Image (cartoon, rainbow, N blue to C red):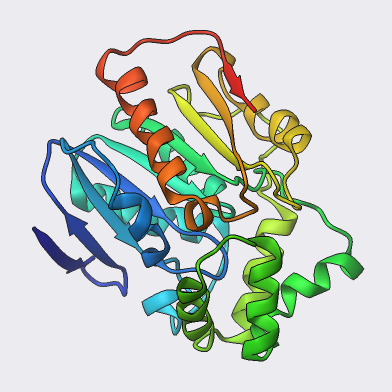
Length: 275
């Protein structure tokens, strides 16, 4: 069963699939929309979870949303969604959505069951120098062929049909919004030097061939923020920065494993690093 709703007095729309006394909420990253998660969701076996998706302000069906475009605003939007759903939840976030879902989970420790971070941008940002970062800031100004070439470079195994779809999604981007949001994830969140306020189980999935987030960066600047006894870091082989597009079955399998291992039994153990 699928339903759609809008948070009252806002432009925040959410899609709800299935039923259950818990929710799994998916947040896409930079340049994407909620539908990038469709192949992963199709292979999930956690039928006791309701599946919830939404678009980030400035992207997808919210491409005309006004600013400000900040981590605090994005977290406030996601918080409004989990509060409207009103259930204990797991949050799944890709790339720049990783700091967003972490902030929301830390702010609602009584209902946040776990985090799954896919190719996570560090809370402190990537801090790329201006010259190198200009490519990302200008992505909203590229032509269709140039944009598709960029996506192919960072996600070489992405299906051609999905790249075509994402190209159509990108045609609605406002260049000034792309520049503003790019600066958000490059500069990071102000309080990022502190350990995470979320103490629950965390699954971190990185693309083994990700040119932006190496194993060293993920270990030192993402995983180190969380409780090592409740954190699992796994490399998704043959994938770049978008493993949920390139290897959706592998990503779904890791989430399927993470949920019963950490949520049903409440078990914890030493941090696992596979790959």
